Length: 295
Image (tube, rainbow, N blue to C red; front, side, top):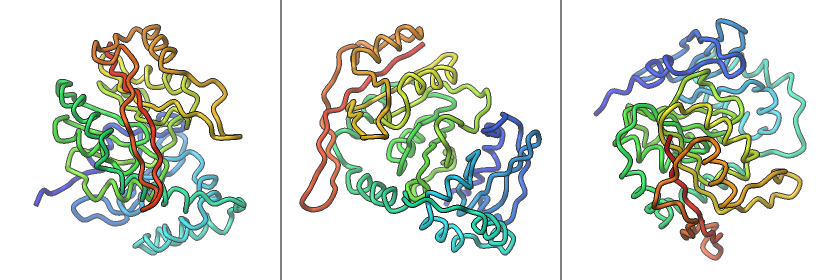
C-alpha cells in the first residue's frame, strides 16, 4: 500500500486565497496524511479548516456554511477532535441561515456524475489527454468527483483538483493517489497565489462563472503550457445565468487573442455526446465541444 503524505507536501503550492500569503499548519490529527487541522495565513491571519482530509480554502467560510445547513451537520459529525468541534460550533452559532440549502443539490449532482463516469465523453477526453506530454503541475477547475483529475495523475507529476462541492470531493478522494490534492475552493479566489501551472483544465464549467473572467484567470496561471476547455455552451440558468456567454467560435477567438495556439484536432467545433444519467428513467443529453490550446 502506498503511504500518502498528501497535504503536507502540497503546502509548497498553496497560499491564502485572500492575500496570497504563506500558510502555517496547526495539525489536529494526522495518520498517513493530515486528517484534520487549521491552515492560518501568516499575513492576513485568516484561517481555513481541514476536515476529513479536505482543505476548505474559502475566504468567507461563514457565507458558504449559511448556504449549506445540511452539510454543516455532516461537517460537525466528521470532525474527529474536540478542538475542531468547538471551533465549528462557535461558527455555526453565529450563522444567519439562508432559506435555500445547496447541500442536497450538490449531493444529487455528485450521484449523477458517479452514475455517468463511464460515458463516452470522458473516454474521448481521456484519449486527448493521453497525447499531451507529461506535465509537472496540473490544475483542474470544477473537478467534481475527480473522474479526470484522478485519471491524469497517472501520467503527470502533480495534480490539483478544485471544486465547491464538499460531497463531490469526498468521492474524488476515494481514488486519490499520492501525487494529487483535492481542495474545496472558489474559482475566482483560488489558493495558489502567483503559482503557475503548465496545464489547466476547465471541463463543462462555463455556465458557473463569466467565461471572459474564467479565461482571464486561467490565462494568468499559465506562462507556458496547455489549456483544455470543453463545454456544451448551455448557459440558461435563469437568474443565475452568466451575463456575457461565449459560443464555440468566440471562445476560440478569445484564446487566440490570449496568444494560445489551438490544436489542429480541435480547431473546428466538435459535438461529442455527453449523457448524464439522472435516474433509471431520465437522462440529460448534451453535445460537447472540446478545445486544446497551447502557448
